[in-house]
Length: 169
Ligand SMILES: [Zn+2]
Image (tube, rainbow, N blue to C red):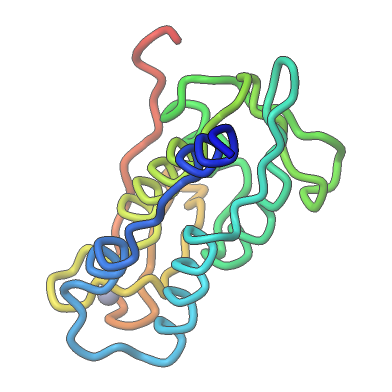
């Protein structure tokens, strides 16, 4: 019985009220599309991250689901994930559907969750006060050679911060 109780305490506990507050604060008029994206994202962060620890890596199985939800470029997201978690990432196959190998043993749900939230705050959420919509798009501008985010709610456009590797992991 004792071992069962111990395994229970290792389970990840989701703080629903904090997460919701962080994702919904600052929103005055939620548009339908934005509610849809946010609800899916919260659902994904709550239960949906499928991850299998392996001897020398972790298989992130449903990264495609996340990228479709937030409509982001896999390479842009991968670069950020590598930098944020300080690890290498390999595609399992040529198909994004098969997920990614994170080259670290037992990457925790919390690590992934923190990284996803940070990415959303930097590259998905509109930073216009009073808007903060997640219904945005990110495109590489060939002339500027930079990624430009456009908000579908308030139409704001901005060049987002470059992802630079400044430290050696
Ligand atoms: Zn906006």
